[in-house]
Image (tube, rainbow, N blue to C red):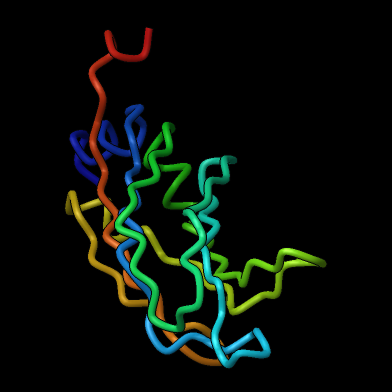
Length: 137
């Protein structure tokens, strides 16, 4: 591995996850729809999107940012959980996957259409931006 590759892996930066949409999700509610949202976990942090009411093909259009080292993000991957929001009771799982972030070692942006285990897929764009040291002080 070249020294610039090693420097990229160890530098602090921001992993941005643009949660674009999902398609053909499981119907979890009695009305034949779901109220989906995503939970994204990486770098020891977890963030979530807002809930899209009554949809099997939601569009979030939201960016979730995580600060850390690229090497840590690559080794842990990006865990995505799709869930159905329930007003009363526990939220229903719609599917969970782990996205391999290894390609970010050589590129700045990764487009992902990740199938969920039972049904549906999530559409994301994952970007890595190395941050200058003064921004982290």
